[in-house]
Length: 105
Ligand SMILES: [Zn+2]
Image (cartoon, rainbow, N blue to C red; front, side, top):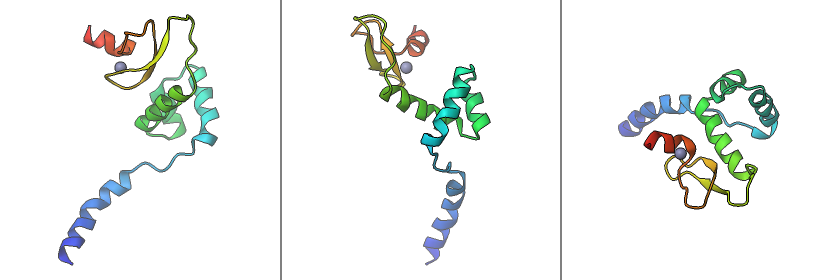
Protein backbone atom coordinates (compact mmCIF):
# COMPACT_ATOMS: atom_id res chain seq x y z
CA UNK A 1 0.00 0.00 0.00
CA UNK A 2 2.76 2.36 0.97
CA UNK A 3 4.74 1.49 -2.15
CA UNK A 4 1.91 2.08 -4.62
CA UNK A 5 1.32 5.46 -3.06
CA UNK A 6 4.93 6.51 -3.63
CA UNK A 7 4.83 5.19 -7.20
CA UNK A 8 1.68 7.16 -8.03
CA UNK A 9 3.20 10.35 -6.68
CA UNK A 10 6.33 9.84 -8.75
CA UNK A 11 4.33 9.33 -11.93
CA UNK A 12 2.06 12.31 -11.51
CA UNK A 13 4.38 15.00 -12.98
CA UNK A 14 5.06 12.90 -16.09
CA UNK A 15 1.35 12.54 -16.69
CA UNK A 16 0.82 16.26 -16.40
CA UNK A 17 3.48 17.09 -19.01
CA UNK A 18 2.27 14.50 -21.52
CA UNK A 19 0.95 16.42 -24.53
CA UNK A 20 -2.77 16.15 -25.24
CA UNK A 21 -3.92 14.03 -28.15
CA UNK A 22 -3.83 16.05 -31.34
CA UNK A 23 -6.55 15.83 -33.95
CA UNK A 24 -4.44 16.17 -37.09
CA UNK A 25 -7.45 15.93 -39.37
CA UNK A 26 -8.76 19.29 -38.13
CA UNK A 27 -5.32 20.81 -37.58
CA UNK A 28 -3.72 19.83 -40.89
CA UNK A 29 -5.09 22.78 -42.93
CA UNK A 30 -3.74 25.26 -40.36
CA UNK A 31 -0.37 23.52 -40.34
CA UNK A 32 -0.31 23.49 -44.13
CA UNK A 33 -1.32 27.15 -44.26
CA UNK A 34 1.41 28.30 -41.85
CA UNK A 35 4.02 26.15 -43.52
CA UNK A 36 3.23 27.54 -46.98
CA UNK A 37 3.51 31.04 -45.54
CA UNK A 38 7.06 30.12 -44.71
CA UNK A 39 6.81 29.66 -40.97
CA UNK A 40 9.33 27.30 -39.44
CA UNK A 41 8.21 24.11 -37.73
CA UNK A 42 8.95 25.73 -34.37
CA UNK A 43 6.92 28.85 -35.16
CA UNK A 44 4.05 26.81 -36.63
CA UNK A 45 3.97 24.69 -33.48
CA UNK A 46 3.99 27.77 -31.27
CA UNK A 47 1.12 29.42 -33.15
CA UNK A 48 -1.00 26.30 -32.99
CA UNK A 49 -0.19 25.63 -29.36
CA UNK A 50 1.59 22.39 -30.15
CA UNK A 51 4.75 20.87 -28.81
CA UNK A 52 7.40 21.29 -31.50
CA UNK A 53 8.43 17.64 -31.14
CA UNK A 54 4.83 16.56 -31.67
CA UNK A 55 4.63 18.60 -34.85
CA UNK A 56 8.00 17.39 -36.10
CA UNK A 57 6.95 13.78 -35.61
CA UNK A 58 3.70 14.48 -37.43
CA UNK A 59 5.41 16.16 -40.37
CA UNK A 60 7.76 13.21 -40.67
CA UNK A 61 4.88 10.75 -40.78
CA UNK A 62 3.03 13.04 -43.17
CA UNK A 63 5.94 13.25 -45.59
CA UNK A 64 6.25 9.47 -45.56
CA UNK A 65 2.66 8.96 -46.55
CA UNK A 66 2.17 11.87 -48.91
CA UNK A 67 4.82 11.42 -51.48
CA UNK A 68 7.55 13.97 -51.89
CA UNK A 69 7.48 14.63 -55.64
CA UNK A 70 10.27 13.01 -57.59
CA UNK A 71 11.79 15.16 -60.34
CA UNK A 72 13.90 12.55 -62.06
CA UNK A 73 13.60 8.82 -62.69
CA UNK A 74 16.82 8.02 -60.80
CA UNK A 75 15.53 9.61 -57.60
CA UNK A 76 14.16 7.40 -54.87
CA UNK A 77 12.26 8.00 -51.67
CA UNK A 78 14.22 7.08 -48.61
CA UNK A 79 14.12 7.32 -44.87
CA UNK A 80 17.36 8.61 -43.46
CA UNK A 81 19.36 5.91 -41.69
CA UNK A 82 20.36 8.37 -39.02
CA UNK A 83 17.31 10.51 -38.22
CA UNK A 84 14.60 8.52 -40.03
CA UNK A 85 13.14 11.52 -41.81
CA UNK A 86 11.88 11.05 -45.34
CA UNK A 87 13.83 12.52 -48.20
CA UNK A 88 14.37 12.14 -51.91
CA UNK A 89 17.74 10.64 -52.75
CA UNK A 90 19.55 11.29 -56.03
CA UNK A 91 20.30 7.64 -56.33
CA UNK A 92 19.48 4.44 -54.60
CA UNK A 93 22.76 4.20 -52.69
CA UNK A 94 22.15 7.40 -50.78
CA UNK A 95 20.94 6.54 -47.30
CA UNK A 96 21.33 9.77 -45.34
CA UNK A 97 19.16 12.87 -45.61
CA UNK A 98 20.84 16.11 -46.77
CA UNK A 99 21.04 17.47 -43.20
CA UNK A 100 22.71 14.36 -41.83
CA UNK A 101 25.03 14.13 -44.80
CA UNK A 102 26.14 17.71 -44.14
CA UNK A 103 26.54 16.90 -40.46
CA UNK A 104 28.70 13.84 -41.09
CA UNK A 105 30.64 15.58 -43.83
ZN1 LIG B 1 18.95 12.40 -41.44
